[in-house]
Length: 368
Image 1 (cartoon, rainbow, N blue to C red):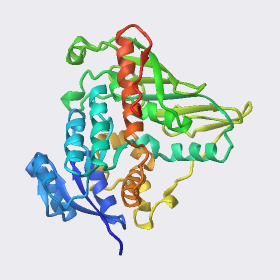
Image 2: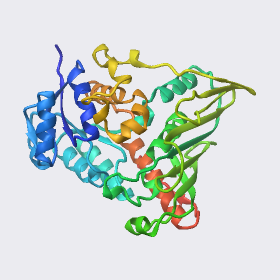
Image 3: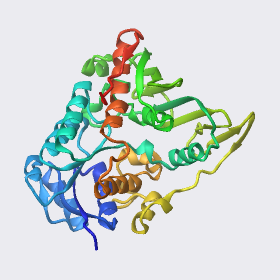
Image 4: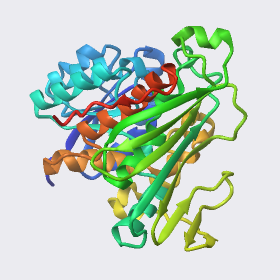
């Protein structure tokens, strides 16, 4: 048996979804979990038979037996915990977004380069069965030349933890931004974004952002392509949708409007609904089952984002496998630190544009 990557999970709400995946992965081992609330820490630890438990993140980082940490903390902790983990010589996977400011993204890129450890933003939208399906169309030449891309993420965040209340829509835009940039294999270069509508004063006061919806047009770097992204978080009536559309020379793909429908493929002017296949065959056999089922203690205890997002399109085992494989193969994961910083900063800069009445804003080039 070859070396296994020893993983610690930080944050056990959504994070608990990944524990059985790493436990069953043939090249990984869950060695520790971390949660501030000891009662919940012990509940999860007992449920999954994990003995090494931490309520203090800094203490976890002192554990030399841990190769990698998978961070699922509240978003305002992502940057500080990522940087601390990289500096503690750990590989890092972190749920989206990478950070809450452009400067934090820069600091993470710097810490990754200095540490030489791998960083991966765990972007579910890049490992859904729909994304993998369209990626296959692109790679096989069936799309032809891509002409335009559109992403949308509309979600009612009422009732989520308090730090979400009033969050600017584009501050959490990676689910809509990343498929467009990944399928085009480009970075966002600059953006013009407009805010529309108005949320309640009670919500708006938390971040100083009044808009119900933000809609952005991105120009892609070193490309003739542009992409459009629409994002809403509060006080907008819409069934949850986390979607992308791709318009291309030979074949185009449009996401369904309602969850129980199917996507549409267009070849010329002829459209047809398609059943998108599962891609479990790309995974090691022991974790293939996790593309079609939740993993933590039954449906009644699934994290809300998992339920609203229909299981995130089967993405969880694909992300975990990519992280583990990248470490063992000593290669950049997808998305790597540069892509993650661009996908996150694209939304942050878009919100700046919206607050400046649509003025064109440059997205930093983190590769320089």
